[in-house]
Length: 186
Picture 1 (spheres, one colour):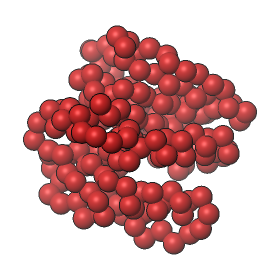
Picture 2 (cartoon, one colour):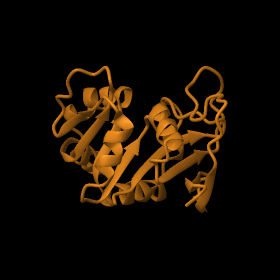
Picture 3 (cartoon, helix red, strand yellow):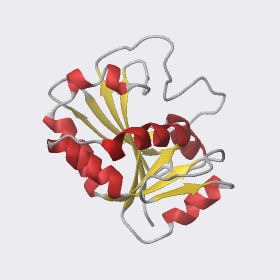
Picture 4 (cartoon, helix red, strand yellow):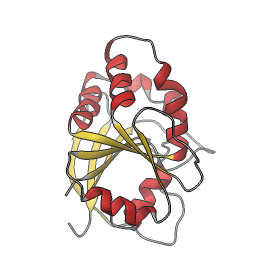
């Protein structure tokens, strides 16, 4: 069975939204290696609608060089699964919409042959997958910065508890914590 692995840049106060506004001063070769490892172990990418639309408006037109070009090539060529009951089309290369009973469709997708299915961003989808027991690993790169009010937080106030088990932890030299969690019952 394929593993579904989500990776998020996160601030100390739990913000995952708009990392382009606070994350880059902390980006390092170690963090790049972590992102690269996730890409190397995944032959598919799952995105929520908002993240998909943000990525699809930028990465297909990227003309830079170096590591970002490699990242763009990966994103542009990998199989993408877009979870949305409102999106009518997904025209970015190799994109498929998952709609209807999305949790059942994701269960079926995990049973297909292949490597990991990676996720980036898509905090609402991450929470939903955790609630339904479909997320196998949650990799958080927790940055030593509090972003403040008015931003999306990974865990919004909720009545439901989402117990997790710490699988691995590392401190990167720049102070970023690399924390990997799995389901508490695993």
